[in-house]
Length: 236
Image (cartoon, rainbow, N blue to C red; front, top):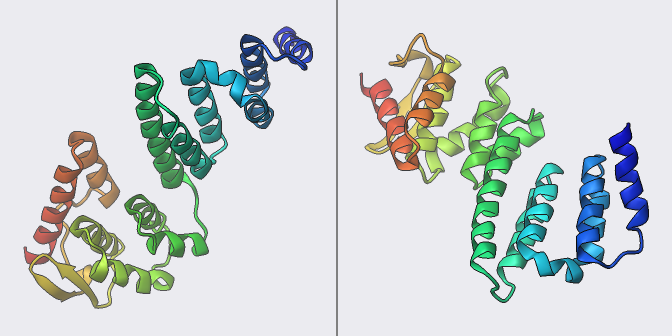
């Protein structure tokens, strides 16, 4: 309660300030009181004044946008900062770290967010790999029939073999008993996923992918591992 009163006092005392340090205290107080939108308003109103401490300003603004799950806004602001006349090595390094932070937060957000049927269709049709994977993960406890057209489209048309393979493995995991078409490296195949014997039983598919991802951080190695697994499933 005492801390809350202190933050509220800081906000009151800095209401009409134009001193950069006071403005940063004002922003920090809004953040401490869980008022990120108010903090962003301070930044927007006093951006020119705060720009004297650009690395700090960038970090605060981007992190606030991420906390609100406004990832597209965070990317736009990052681009805005990238296009400013260059200032310091510290600012450049901060931009790189913030870009990675946005990417990581966005992926985590989409991978954990419950999706309704409309969103799953949207994700499965997305050109972004992370969205497709999030859509596939969301099918674990769902009937696949409403999504079969999307799944077959991925298996036939997606540019990455690993994503096509992951989609097939999703059908194998769900014991899908109807014939589907699948574009493998060696050509177009027709398979019944239920008849394919996964080499990783009794582990669930998601555990295999997770173990691969944890062990090998290189995405090329991960992609190749998934493709090899799918070859084993089909040809063993």
